Amino acid sequence: MADFKIGKVTHYFDKIQVAIVEISGNLAVGDKIKFVRGGEDLFEQVVTSIQIEHEKKDSASKGEIVGIKVEKELKEDAEVFKL
Image (tube, rainbow, N blue to C red; front, side, top):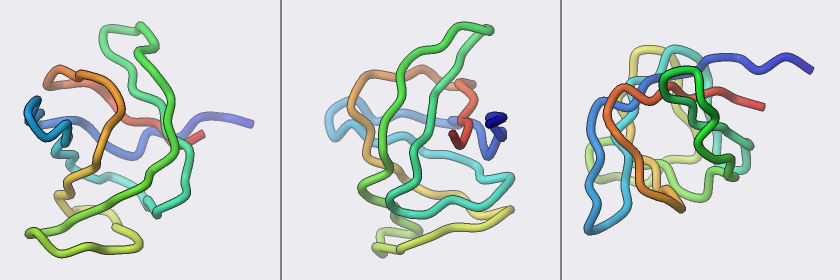
């Protein structure tokens, strides 16, 4: 199964481990995603939390900017792929 790029990290809040992602596809709680930066796979995780403007959501679609709770540290410009 091919990986689909569904967004890009625009900011990372290290104290609360939240990545701000500009979504270019569809994303839902429960989806498995992978973070890639500079062609290097960083890590994979299951989406456990999505927030838009501090409101919990079950899904997000193209054009939205969301906060995603992440398991490890990230840097800006990391790409997000749905597995």
